[in-house]
Image (cartoon, rainbow, N blue to C red):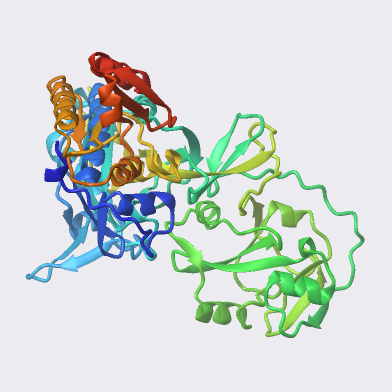
Amino acid sequence: MRLSRYFIPTLREIPAEAEVISHKYMLRAGMIKKIASGIYDYLPVGLRVIRKVENIVRQCMNDAGAIEMLMPAVQPAELWQESGRWSIYGKELLRMKDRHDRDFCMGPTHEEVTTDIVRDFLTSYKQLPVNFYQIQNKFRDEVRPRFGLMRGREFIMKDAYSFDVDDAGASKSYEKMREAYCRIFDLCGLEYTMVDADSGAIGGSYSHEFMVLADTGEDAVMSTDKGGYAANLEKAVCADNWLPSEEPERESERVETPKAHTVEEVAEFLSQPIEKIVKTMIVNADGKFYAFMVRGDHELNLAKAKNALGADTAELAAPADIVEVTGGAVGFSGPCGLDIPVFADFAVKAMRNMTVGGNEKDVHVINTNADRDFNVTGYGDYRNAVEGDICPEDGGKYKLTRGIEVGHIFKLGTKYSEAMNCVYLDKEGKRHPMLMGCYGIGITRVVAAAIEQNHDEKGIIWPVQLAPYKVVVVPVNTNDEAVMNMAENIYKELESLNVEVMLDDRDERAGVKFTDAELVGYPIRVTIGKKALAEGNVEINIRKTGETVTAKKADCISRVLKLIKELS
């Protein structure tokens, strides 16, 4: 491709909207253009990288025995009502009506549609197992789209769905996908880890996320110093290993705490350590209210609370609901006198003489103790793990790293097949619900994650496998006939060898061409200058290392081919 006839609208300045590295460089390198919040045009060079990721994914999915199809982006509400998700999926589901006033949605995922296909066409155990996948645009109406393609509203995703006759088969399908995902991310040249994860709105018995490790990642990954366990923050388990306090119980007392709303303010006002204060959070789970108690220096984990309650949804209660449930002001909730179930974290179980909210504005209660001053329905792991916590899985200490979720695999069980009557007949002709799995990869997010992991102050450093073009040929002076002839010869020979090569034949200064080449991130740059050419040489620059080597004209092609192989 000749750059003079191509379209890469590079920018010199960092756009004001860009927050993270990948967003900045994708805009500056002319890969994407924003048209609305969380919605982007994929410009030619950006689309080439996206297609590279898609092809790697498609190759590995096909090798794993999955079958590609394409399902509609717009889905009828009836299917979602069958599964029960129409009423519980949050505002991220973009709902709409057609001209006949029928309800539809823009698909954020396709469990229902795939299940509908399978139940209509696959009815015998002889037709199973099967795994269908697609690569398609999805839409999730994120409340706060940010970070470019990292968390957009419209994005490209590979989603797959497996159907098996029993749990052993479902586990085998799950393992096949785990292996395929590892191969995909290896081929993409990414450093990643697999972690335990919460299944969220998708549901199912268990799931794992694939995280690309990057300091700028928006996801928190908790792993142990022993290396035997890793999970995202929602899932990381906390041990019940707190030693009971040996303090003698004191008489509880209501005290005024004017203008002390936060835990830090209350601790300062009462001259108490923050660890002596307990937060009582009112949670709305499937329309019912519960109180969860966590220590002042800990944070409530809503995913753990939801799972403990067996609820479909869980969120912090609205201010008006908090007032109604507690009879007091927002910010001063406490367990004493509540008529709703109260659950307490393991760390709270070990406490004595704790300070809690008084369910009254500017009032707290000091020296409260469970059983005497309030009843606890149950104790459990309801908080976020923090660095230094002991992991109950391998006994190691947690350490926090940052990651970008690029893939998620779920073992769904019969959640959808039972609800939607997706059954098969066994050898005896008996009907059984199929066991399902689902497996997603954020194609566009992989592109952003690759940039987060591979860049410097000059621009993108693409892994060769993902680079839009592997080589850029740069004639320093396009008005010099000898320089241009050599550039043309190298370009055409590489092209004839099926090397993805760009010829920067623009009438621009050499500095502009070099800057653009580093920004876009071509792995190899071949530079033809008048002086070097007079000596019978060309210069070959390796983007990843910054190394520049001099090669004889006759050796240029072989050196480039060797470098491509070494970098792959």
